[in-house]
Length: 95
Ligand code: HEC
Image 1 (spheres, rainbow, N blue to C red):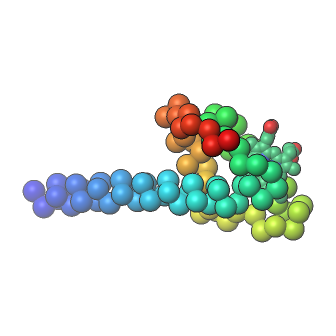
Image 2 (spheres, rainbow, N blue to C red):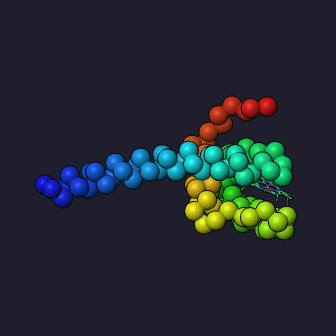
């Protein structure tokens, strides 16, 4: 009984954390990925392509003398982008 409750509570916390991660990932994406070019459309690539491209962008940042994303930021941005693609979500273009 107690164990089931604990599992429920932990499950809820994990879900809330995932939501926060999405918001954080989006904020990082918007802050870090429009420095050298316009912000790309989050749903333009599939998750595997995003991973490869993010690794390339890390290199571009190093070459430009901009600190690359740390592991946590990299994961947050990647998770945000991967989730946009999975939702198939075109959420309206800004321009
Ligand atoms: C240091 C400057 C710099 C930063 C910061 C940067 N990029 Fe780029 N990005 C580039 C350059 C240069 C290219 C041109 C392609 C290449 O490097 O070969 C590019 C190209 C792209 C493309 C187009 C690729 C294609 O094939 O059309 C996408 C999408 C992209 N970047 C996404 C991102 C994302 C997401 C981030 C944030 C994590 C980011 N960029 C941050 C320099 C940067």
